[in-house]
Structure formats: structure tokens, C-alpha cells
Image 1: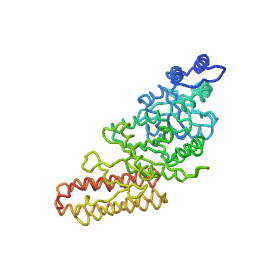
Image 2: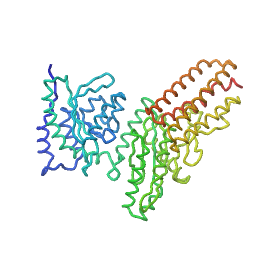
Image 3: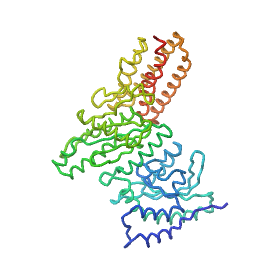
Length: 489
């Protein structure tokens, strides 16, 4: 059998780069024009991708993007988990982790499975390093294969060995590119340009698939006083400390970037209002818990906005910015969410969220929600209270067994409420009783499944809480349940 290898021609690439781009055996400062030249040399012959230490893509040439059959730039900021099944992604990230753990280049013969479309590749992964010599990510060079036969393995290994020597010379180049094009030089977090690009992609995903998307806008409190009192060098240290603390509170899929000066933006993919509240509050606490030499404690004012139909990134960011200024005016060191959407608005059912206490956004019961039936109204209020208690436990960092117990209690209360409510439906002979029963069954099944995934460490608490509080307790009870209120009267 014949093995088809798209020849890397490493000697040609190396000498071409040497003659065109190198002076005195050192790479020049990387710019977009140089990247284009590099892509022209390698793009049609090998698939080249670069990931940071969290396995997020920061570079992919045209051939690598073609492997994923995606639009130019769509890979940047994502991980392999966004493109293949969870189990397959775990296998791929395990190989990346091996490179980070060993610090050595490793070769693999592997098969990529894109939802049934299988591609055989020979790959070489190697660590790439920053200007200080530390490893800051993993680079991948893949060569597509028609088949893997034993007879071609030696030839393939030889070709990969040559490729490894060539690509290792480009490590510093890729590192510089990352710093210039996508990251903030002071902090190492994403820069404004990358945030704008990523946000527009998330807006497109929201418009196409309806995946929720939230934005956090954060500003360091009294930062001008820091510069005036201790100088800009200390101010830089405060900014770096802010980023380090914020990152401890964020998930691997969240995107933190420096917007400018002491302002920062966090993009929260697949995140609704309640889950965004949890994330923002964790971030606020992590920042305020620091003790910075000379300065002491720093705090931040944080605003949140959640995507809605017709949003652009500019409109979403403006609402998050306004919410942040509301936090400033309310005393700083707190989280504020954009103005709520009216219950009368068919596009959203988020009016039930309020700031219950400083720095705590939760569900609050209003008399307008009452239907007039004592049992139903009492149960609804109890479920609101239990949801807030659960959120409080999460924000307080309670142990997982405590949170799991509260989840079980909330689910049990939901099931009991649904049973009592359906009995009342039957008494009133409501014509939509069967349809509503099916909705109840579906909600309970989804909630139980998510709770099991949380117990098995397959789901973050924010996602589970968002479903319980938003979909089950608030949205269902204040939207779907309202349909039978007239029959009670």
C-alpha cells in the first residue's frame, strides 16, 4: 500500500527563511507580513497549529484550518473541545500535556475524528518558549496520510525528524508573534484586538445557535491613586496582580483581556445571567483577597451584560460598561448586572433578578408573581429562597458535599411542587394540563442529569445552578405557569 505524504521539504523552507528573513543568524521582530511569508512557505505542505498552556489555539495556518473545515481565524481562542467529542478531545490534550510535562518533542501517528470524518495524520508536537526561555505552549505540525504502513514508518520518522529541527528554529518566532498580535505585553492576558475578534465570533454563535453569551467589564478601583502615590511601576504590579487573581476565578473557556489601562473585559461563552453572576463574584472576591506589597488590598467594580437578540459586541459592551459604572456609584468593590428585561418582553424573562445584598445578585419574590393560590404561591417563594441559599453556598465556597445536599433538597422541592401543581390543574380542568405535565417531566429529567454530571465532576456548578435557578425555578414558574393563572381565578 502506498503512503501519501505531503512533503514538508524542510531544507527548502529553512533556506528560504534564512535568505529572506534572517540577518546574522537571528530572527527579526515578527510582524503580520512575516507570518504571511511563513504561511506561504509551509501552508500548502504541512498543517501547523500553536496552542497556549491551556491548549487554546493562538495560531493556525491555512492547511490546519482546512483540516477543521472552518473559517479563517475561527480556531483562535478555542480548544479542541470545541471541535471534537469530549473523549477524543481528552486523548488529544493528553498528548499535548505529555509535551509540556516532558519538555521534549514527541511524534505520533493518530486519527482525528470530526463527527465521523476521519483524517489520519503523522504529527509532531513540541514545546515552544517565550523570550525568557520558559515554555508557554505547544506547537503541532501534522502531515496528512492516506495510510500508515510499517514500510513507510522509517521514512516518515526521518521526515518528521527533519521537520522537528526546522520547526524548533521557529519557536521563538511564534512566541514573539503571540505577544505582538494577540496578547497584552505587560500582563500576558489577551489584548483588545483579540477580545474584539473573539467577541464577534461569540455573537455569531449566539445569533446562529442561540448559545448564551455574557460579557464582564471590570475596572480597578482608585487606580489613579496608586499611580499618584506609588508611581507607575507599582501601578503595573497592581495590574499584573489583578490579572493573576482574576484568572484563578475564571474557567478554561473564559477569555480575559486587557481593554486599556486599568480596564478589563471577560468573555463568557455559553454563559447566562446567573452563571455569569457566579463567575463575576468569584472574580471580585479573588481580587479583593490579595495583599499587594506597599499597596495592600485592591478591589474592582464589575459590570455584567448578557446577549440578547439584535446585539452587537459594541452594544453588549456598552451595557456591561454602564453596569460597571453603576457598581462604582453604589460604593465600588461590587458586581452589578445590566438593567433587567421586563416580563412583558417575549424575548426575555429576566426581571426576577435583583441585587439582594451588596455584591449578591439573586432571585427576589414580588407580589406581582402571586397567582392567588396559597399552596402554589408558598411553594414558589420557597423555591426562590432555596435557589438563593444554594447560590450563597456556592459563592461562599462551601464544600461540594454541602452544595450537593442543597441541590438534592432543591430538586426534591421542585418535584413535590410539580406534583401538587398538576393535581390543581386536574381540579380546574385546565386544557393544557397534559402539555404542562410533559414540560415538568422534561425539566426534572434534565435537572437530574445535570446534577449527576456535577457529582461526577463532568459539569461546573455554574452551569447546573443556571439551569435550576433560571430555567426551572424562575423562567418556568414565572412564564409557563402564568398560562394557567386565569383558570385559578
